View (cartoon, rainbow, N blue to C red):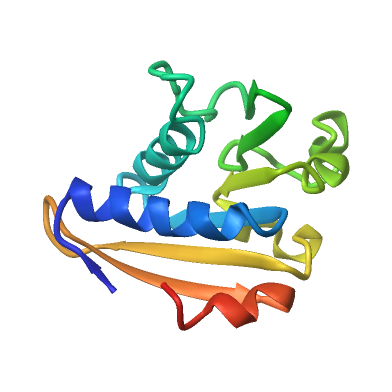
Length: 149
């Protein structure tokens, strides 16, 4: 799939939100620095909590985890970039947070073996300044959604 601009990135986020309304959803975001992982996450979070108008959505690169809650809905937004080992995830309650409504994980490919069986992996590749190539891989119970996006 080709994302020609940020509007296309927002559209992709909206389509994945439709899945999250039916399922607990773990979304793994991978790709080089500046490829669109955090931009996707921001659009997803803003659109998921559309009635809340969340404007400050920082990258969790330094905090490792940002948690967003509104009306009993919860999104855990992780960034594995600075983590050295998967043991560091114990302190961040990772194994429990993947059971919440939505879990977004940037740089998830660093610790592939701890990811849940059921997940959506999105790989971002830079094509040009504004366009990105994106591949979506559905695992486990999410395979049924593969042809709907």
